[in-house]
Image (tube, rainbow, N blue to C red; front, side, top):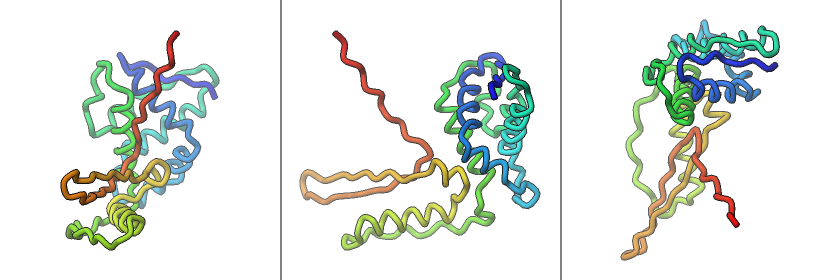
Length: 182
């Protein structure tokens, strides 16, 4: 349904990010099916997001709902003022806090020792090993939906040794090509 979010000062950046998240069926389903009683943490952001989503579903078309409870539930207080902020920055923080709230890992294992790279290990095996290590600490519906692993390589111009690293992400920034003028 067509429901807006009240502007709490200059919160259009927040409202656009929240509207995007609430219209992704996988996100709605993931948050809607959480057993908050047995989660083992407060999960204030996830609860507030669910409540806001449910409120939006109950309001008639062209109505408005206040996102104030969601904004106040965030542990990152950067966004609790009435100033203008960056939408992508807010979205990253929101997704990170939703991930923390919904993380299925109840007791995080001790950090693993850094494994020395084996030059004979295939890159796919290395990527999988590092991804499994990441998931042993970070396993949530947010990771299921948005998570990925970025591979980057550097090659030494002197000795020709190639170094490859893998970094987890929840979002990717991609450039928007400029149109040709004239």
